[in-house]
Every structure is written in structure tokens, then in C-alpha cells.
Image 1 (tube, rainbow, N blue to C red):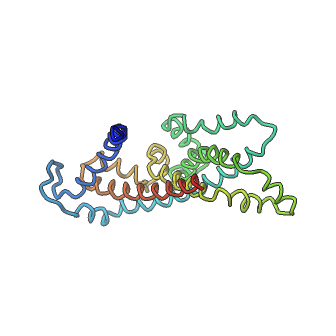
Image 2 (image 1 turned 120 degrees about the horizontal axis):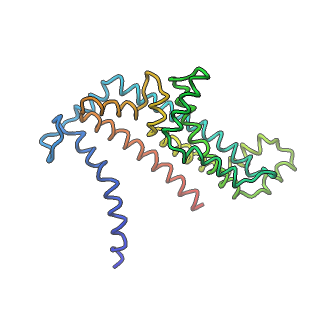
Image 3 (image 1 turned 90 degrees about the horizontal axis):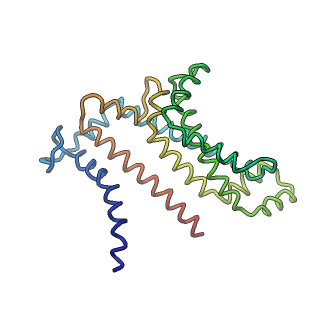
Length: 256
């Protein structure tokens, strides 16, 4: 039967969504100690989150960091991908392999090395260090992505624009970027989501102001509170909304 083919998919979706659903249910529990079934429901933990200056500050810092990293990574990735497509005298496959190194090196080793690097250049334990650390990790992934996107474009459009007297800046921003505008948006959203959840590098290089992931981890080391479930539910819904929008754009790009 056809419906039987969907059983593995439904099972995987259940495993993925079940923890999130439980987290959402527990976030409305009136009791500090988590039990099933939930005796009574309340929104007091959400009020606690809103009135917690450290949590609100960490969320705002993470939002600022994610947007900054998304813009920087996509800009660097797009320019690097464009250069790599038009390069003639290098081994492109070797360069692409080198670009994947930050993603496959254990983050804790990279974080240790980056911490020492930031100490020597005088930006250790700052917001700037966190942004640079995330950008170094995610911009190579953006480079590989844009290399494959740009390499599929019709090069005759660039040649025609040059023949008509268009500058290189106009060719890059209007001809090339204009054709993959939706891909640029999707990549920016994905990088933002990855930066939002990144913990290891943020823990090593962030200063007194902690990102959301580090702040929640610190809360779990002390007294546990359903407040963590409230924070997780809020950020989970935001991440789901952002990724849904990006996939919608991606699907339109594929269909068109």
C-alpha cells in the first residue's frame, strides 16, 4: 500500500519533533518540577524570560551576531565563489577541499586556536571576536555553495555585458547576483540559523556578554528551571519560521 511508504518518514519526523513538542508542553507547566501529565498550565516562565535582563541581552546579542555573520559570510562567500569560477590557473577542486577544512576540524580545537589568535591581536573576549570566529567557520561553506550556483549560470550574459561597456562591479552586482538573488537570501538565512545555534566557539571567545547558546548552557549548570524550556520554545519557533521561509524561496528557485 502507498501509505506504507510514508511510515519511515513519519517515524523520523516523530523522532525530530517529539523533543520539541515536549519542550513546548513543559514550558507551560506551572510546576517547577517536570512531571507527566502536567498538573496545571501557566505562562509564568515566559514572563520570567521577558523580565530576565541576562536572557534578553543574550538573545539580542545572538541576533546581532547572527545578522552580522550572515552578511559577512555571504558577501565573502559570493565574492570568493565568483573568483573561483573565473580562475583559470589553479586547481579548483583542491581549493574547494581547502575551503571545507574549517567545517571538518573539530570545533573545540579550532576554538582553542582562535582564542589564542585573538589574544595576540588584542580582540579576545569581545563581540568582534565572536563575529569573526563564526564568519571564518561559515564563509567557506558559503563559498562552496556560491561556486556551484555561479558555475551553472550562462557566461554569455557576462560577456555581452562587458561588450556593451558594463563595469565589473555592475556585472557582479546586477548580472551575476541578480540571477541568484533568491539563493543569496537562502544562504544568508541558513548561515544565520547556524550562527544562532553555535555554542563551542562562542563559549571560548565571547566576553562577559554571552550568546544565547552559552547563556542557556550556563543556566543548565546551575539550578534547572522550566524557563529554559520557554527560551527553547521561543527560539525554536523563530528558527522554524526562518527556515520555512528560506525553503519556500529555495523551492521557488528550483521550480522556476
